[in-house]
Image 1 (spheres, rainbow, N blue to C red):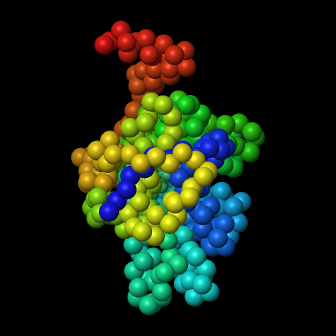
Image 2: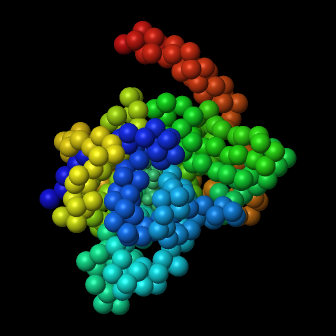
Image 3: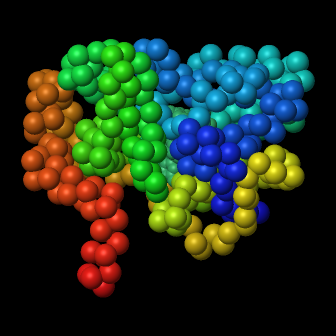
Length: 321
Ligand SMILES: Cc1cc2nc3c(=O)[nH]c(=O)nc-3n(C[C@H](O)[C@H](O)[C@H](O)COP(=O)(O)OP(=O)(O)OC[C@H]3O[C@@H](n4cnc5c(N)ncnc54)[C@H](O)[C@@H]3O)c2cc1C
Ligand code: SF4
């Protein structure tokens, strides 16, 4: 039976560098501290998402933070098989379809899975790597410098969930005042750049493939960053029992809002034309054709941002009520 929790790590630095409350760090620490290895996603120097293997916390720390593009797990299959053959504990973290692929591989190879643990994100879908690379190139042109670091969840603002940040070689930094003002998030959240299979995702349901599922706890949006943690198996429970690095509290399933535990994203009606323009005419032209990056929406969100930082938005909300 599933148990639902909310989790927040006590270490502020963990929270700052994680997407939500740092649940992945809490879970992966248990494996590393018992001599095991952790597999998870990092962005390499070319800004490709890839899965790497970590035996130490410093290596694992690079896996923190969601990268909303597809990660390459091809190296992980054989390495995991070798680790399990060597009786190491293994934690694989990724999207549900990736976890399922690894489990199927281990089953086909008849590899004992007693020491295999999995943690999955509840998944909106993965964005196009090509689009992401064009987006980075465009920003590099604007900032006259090479991008050296990208954070999809930079957490510049308290309680805000998706803050894109790009750090450049010339020490300049880009960060968007809202997801609507950021061109990557704008099209990702409109479901225009998801991988075709994500619209038919068979993992967007209550039954989960992993020992533990992690996600954002949307319910707590107003008061800070908590992770939603769902324990799906007895094995998962062994990783959560005895946790002393953060607040882990059982919550009621009915309090949780998770649309992708019910159904995948819909294909937007303009997806086809978006891709036609993008592939034929390029990134700039598709940017002109669609999106929220209009002067009207920019003005609206800059105004909303100013209200927010002056805390005047709370008064506006009260007056509206
Ligand atoms: C593609 C994607 C879609 C998501 N969609 C939703 C959603 O719709 N609703 C929701 O509530 N939460 C979603 N999440 C989960 C959310 O962004 C956080 O990962 C989650 O709240 C856990 O946060 P944390 O602080 O515990 O983990 P963090 O420390 O931020 O750890 C992130 C974990 O995600 C893994 N990861 C990061 N990027 C990728 C990737 N590209 N592919 C595979 N694994 C990756 C890392 O290996 C690590 O295990 C999504 C995450 C990803 C990567
Ligand atoms: S939405 Fe489904 S198919 Fe797409 S990456 Fe997530 S789990 Fe995989």
